[in-house]
Image (cartoon, rainbow, N blue to C red):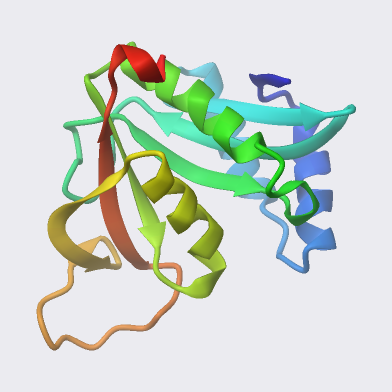
Length: 168
């Protein structure tokens, strides 16, 4: 089941992050709920048997990167480890893409380059996302050739996907 975020989801999502050894994201999740209330972001929650399995958010317009103010952006996509490879990620992306199709003919996203993003990288390619050609970005700026960087969450490749009637 895919639904909008509720206040009670914050504790459940945080508990899942802790189970995976990740830090709490209480402030970020409260901001997402606020953004959803003010229509600055949509938050899609996936539930399986009453348990939150993952979430994804959709910004009406990308805030950074090559698609800033041009395309909607899928952002902060998480399917908790024990729920991965069950189709939940695809279902979440279906919901986000359907919502994005109401706003534009394409949708964008940025994906990290370290192995922790490997499952998402593979899923995006399988779903038809294509790099935009601007190269790798680091800390919200295009990374020039031979420039130093860290392979952390700030090292990103931006991609987009045309939204056709088949994706809706």
